[in-house]
Each structure stands twice: as structure tokens, then as C-alpha cells.
Image 1 (cartoon, rainbow, N blue to C red):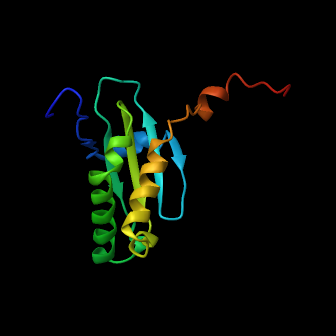
Image 2 (cartoon, rainbow, N blue to C red; image 1 turned 60 degrees about the vertical axis):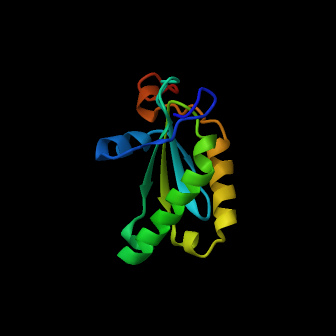
Length: 133
């Protein structure tokens, strides 16, 4: 961190359990990527981000190009829109390669800047839901 007013760089999600935990959060779908957001309820912690590109999107060369474009978009602009204490997983689609970089950065930043919505767990509401049955 360079100064008190400067925001810290986003950390990285690296392990499978971290990625799986984020799946329980909010999902924001779009044509270029899927954004999964989980509020860890730790406002003093730096945000963390992870990147995923499935084999369905192409061979290793294409997947790596998608991942590199997403990482650079986050590094340049989108990380500043991330909320402290939140985890983000960006699931890239092959359309990322066809989109202009400016469109990718703007789309990513606008999708990230929306505050996370609280998602209720389906299992938590099921036992208390009687519905007269």
C-alpha cells in the first residue's frame, strides 16, 4: 500500500475450497462472463478475486488468452470497484476474445460496482417453511 488514501490491490483466490465458497454467493450473468460474488462480512479485509475458464471455451491457448484479458481488465480498472471483504470469481466466456478491451473493462467494472445482494440459503429456509403441508 502506497498511501492511506490508496486502495490495496485485490488478493487472489487460489484453492478449490475458496472458489466453491464463492459459488454460494450472488451470481451476475452476462454475455462476456459470469461474476460470482460472496460477501465474507469482513470489511477490514482486502477483496479477493479468482478466474476460471472452462474447457468448453476452447483449447488451452484460447483459455489462457481469455484469462489474461480478464486479469488485465481487473488490474487496470475493475479492482478499484471491488468492495472490501468480498470475494469475486470471474468465469470467462469465449466472447471475451471478440469484445473490445474497452468494452470488457467497462462491463467488468459496472458489474463489480453493484453492491452484493444478500442471498438466502435454500437449505436454511427449507426446514422452517411449512406451507401447510
